[in-house]
Image (cartoon, rainbow, N blue to C red):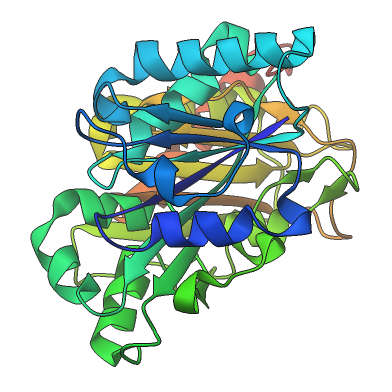
Length: 340
């Protein structure tokens, strides 16, 4: 079951969009978790939904208490679904507090063993206020992070102002791979907001192009601390080389590695692509797709982080691949590691 995340800074229009989505037929059979920062919940009162499909968390910001509150809430929600004590649902959407760092939320979804058995991280949609977004991004680091990890960026309040070129440039500099879509008056289609998932359970389709973003060669930006780049490799990558590469990135970059996602051609298993997905130093267990989404078998790894350099990342991967090749040559090809 997919779990999607709707995030964005305070007042950027998340609740308005969510209220519109809940009235759409395509959004039926969806459980919604709303996190509000404060002692009194207000957002859930503004949304029309059945009581058992809407959960308000008011114990604080999810990014601060995520290891307990979110995991326990999701586990309880799944138990209620299994017991038939709530309306049936096929999808979960988490609306974060406007002050939430989405990274710990994604980490919990990826690493909690009980949740990982049943839930798959879908897409992250981030709302940005067209009126105040530029000033917010310049002032609030958490707003920058919300944009940086997004699969979709939704510009709101376009009924009040048009999108300024400066704001669009800021968004592209923070996340050049995420499409920017309009959410005027909260009106947006479900398929547009949460279209960036790798796996669609209704069609079993693979939407790798959308999931990884559209930008490839020119994803690296130099005018901001948060940068994005896409590493492309035409030749297969040894499983042990990929493992060492991810470990080295996590060790050297730490919290500066905001997000990593990719589809990789593994030399030991050429018939199926490997999907990798990580947030900061935490990586989801890699999974195999049943087939390649296109005729080409190009490995694509998107890296988003603070003060990262494309040249350094590429050199790191090249050096590790060369070292692994040398070891294998010395061992006469007897050394082999398969990622599981």
